[in-house]
Length: 119
Image 1: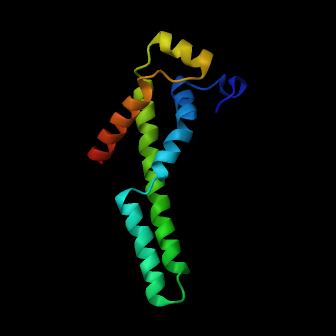
Image 2: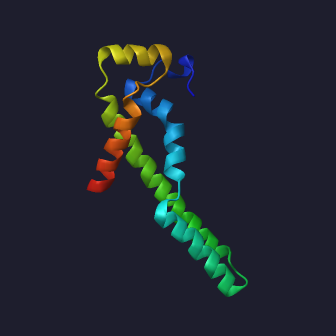
Image 3: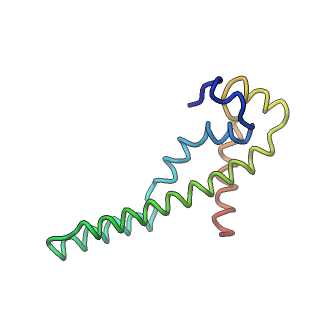
Protein backbone atom coordinates (compact mmCIF):
# COMPACT_ATOMS: atom_id res chain seq x y z
CA UNK A 1 0.00 0.00 0.00
CA UNK A 2 1.09 3.61 0.23
CA UNK A 3 2.75 5.47 3.06
CA UNK A 4 1.82 9.10 3.84
CA UNK A 5 5.39 10.34 3.42
CA UNK A 6 5.56 8.72 -0.03
CA UNK A 7 2.33 10.26 -1.30
CA UNK A 8 2.37 13.71 0.25
CA UNK A 9 3.19 15.49 -3.02
CA UNK A 10 1.20 13.41 -5.51
CA UNK A 11 -2.12 14.37 -7.06
CA UNK A 12 -5.35 12.85 -5.80
CA UNK A 13 -5.67 10.98 -9.09
CA UNK A 14 -2.19 9.50 -8.67
CA UNK A 15 -2.95 8.57 -5.07
CA UNK A 16 -6.07 6.72 -6.21
CA UNK A 17 -3.96 4.82 -8.74
CA UNK A 18 -1.34 3.90 -6.14
CA UNK A 19 -4.05 2.56 -3.83
CA UNK A 20 -5.96 0.64 -6.53
CA UNK A 21 -3.00 -0.59 -8.61
CA UNK A 22 -2.28 -3.85 -6.77
CA UNK A 23 -5.88 -5.08 -6.89
CA UNK A 24 -6.26 -4.04 -10.54
CA UNK A 25 -2.98 -5.72 -11.44
CA UNK A 26 -4.29 -9.04 -10.14
CA UNK A 27 -7.45 -8.61 -12.19
CA UNK A 28 -5.52 -7.61 -15.31
CA UNK A 29 -3.37 -10.75 -15.09
CA UNK A 30 -6.35 -13.11 -15.01
CA UNK A 31 -6.20 -15.09 -18.24
CA UNK A 32 -9.75 -14.73 -19.53
CA UNK A 33 -10.91 -16.84 -22.49
CA UNK A 34 -8.17 -15.74 -24.90
CA UNK A 35 -5.49 -16.13 -22.23
CA UNK A 36 -6.50 -19.71 -21.55
CA UNK A 37 -6.46 -20.31 -25.30
CA UNK A 38 -2.78 -19.24 -25.49
CA UNK A 39 -1.92 -21.50 -22.53
CA UNK A 40 -3.64 -24.52 -24.12
CA UNK A 41 -2.22 -23.76 -27.57
CA UNK A 42 1.30 -23.59 -26.15
CA UNK A 43 0.82 -26.85 -24.30
CA UNK A 44 -0.61 -28.64 -27.35
CA UNK A 45 2.15 -27.33 -29.61
CA UNK A 46 4.75 -28.56 -27.13
CA UNK A 47 3.18 -32.03 -27.06
CA UNK A 48 3.00 -32.16 -30.83
CA UNK A 49 6.63 -31.19 -31.36
CA UNK A 50 8.05 -33.32 -28.51
CA UNK A 51 10.98 -31.00 -28.21
CA UNK A 52 11.55 -27.33 -28.66
CA UNK A 53 8.58 -25.94 -26.82
CA UNK A 54 10.40 -22.88 -25.50
CA UNK A 55 9.50 -20.70 -28.49
CA UNK A 56 5.82 -21.58 -28.24
CA UNK A 57 5.74 -20.97 -24.51
CA UNK A 58 7.57 -17.68 -24.89
CA UNK A 59 5.21 -16.44 -27.60
CA UNK A 60 2.22 -17.36 -25.43
CA UNK A 61 3.82 -15.58 -22.49
CA UNK A 62 4.48 -12.49 -24.65
CA UNK A 63 0.84 -12.42 -25.76
CA UNK A 64 -0.35 -12.64 -22.15
CA UNK A 65 2.09 -9.92 -21.04
CA UNK A 66 0.93 -7.60 -23.82
CA UNK A 67 -2.70 -8.22 -22.89
CA UNK A 68 -1.95 -7.47 -19.22
CA UNK A 69 -0.11 -4.29 -20.16
CA UNK A 70 -3.00 -3.10 -22.32
CA UNK A 71 -5.50 -3.85 -19.58
CA UNK A 72 -3.43 -1.97 -16.98
CA UNK A 73 -3.27 1.07 -19.29
CA UNK A 74 -7.06 0.97 -19.61
CA UNK A 75 -7.43 0.57 -15.84
CA UNK A 76 -5.18 3.61 -15.35
CA UNK A 77 -7.49 5.67 -17.56
CA UNK A 78 -10.54 4.37 -15.70
CA UNK A 79 -9.02 5.25 -12.32
CA UNK A 80 -8.10 8.73 -13.53
CA UNK A 81 -11.60 9.34 -14.93
CA UNK A 82 -13.21 8.08 -11.74
CA UNK A 83 -10.91 10.11 -9.47
CA UNK A 84 -12.11 13.29 -11.16
CA UNK A 85 -15.54 12.63 -9.62
CA UNK A 86 -14.29 12.70 -6.02
CA UNK A 87 -15.88 15.42 -3.91
CA UNK A 88 -13.77 17.77 -1.79
CA UNK A 89 -14.76 15.79 1.32
CA UNK A 90 -13.86 12.47 -0.34
CA UNK A 91 -10.48 13.92 -1.34
CA UNK A 92 -9.79 14.97 2.27
CA UNK A 93 -10.82 11.50 3.48
CA UNK A 94 -8.62 9.87 0.81
CA UNK A 95 -5.62 11.86 2.00
CA UNK A 96 -6.31 11.16 5.66
CA UNK A 97 -7.04 7.42 5.45
CA UNK A 98 -5.42 6.28 2.19
CA UNK A 99 -8.68 4.44 1.46
CA UNK A 100 -10.91 4.75 -1.58
CA UNK A 101 -14.63 5.50 -1.19
CA UNK A 102 -16.83 2.40 -1.35
CA UNK A 103 -18.30 3.43 -4.71
CA UNK A 104 -14.89 3.96 -6.31
CA UNK A 105 -13.80 0.47 -7.44
CA UNK A 106 -17.19 -0.52 -8.89
CA UNK A 107 -17.14 2.74 -10.86
CA UNK A 108 -13.59 1.99 -12.06
CA UNK A 109 -14.81 -1.39 -13.33
CA UNK A 110 -17.74 0.30 -15.12
CA UNK A 111 -15.40 2.85 -16.75
CA UNK A 112 -12.90 0.10 -17.61
CA UNK A 113 -15.63 -1.88 -19.40
CA UNK A 114 -16.70 1.24 -21.34
CA UNK A 115 -13.09 1.99 -22.34
CA UNK A 116 -12.54 -1.61 -23.49
CA UNK A 117 -15.80 -1.58 -25.45
CA UNK A 118 -14.90 1.70 -27.17
CA UNK A 119 -11.38 0.47 -28.02
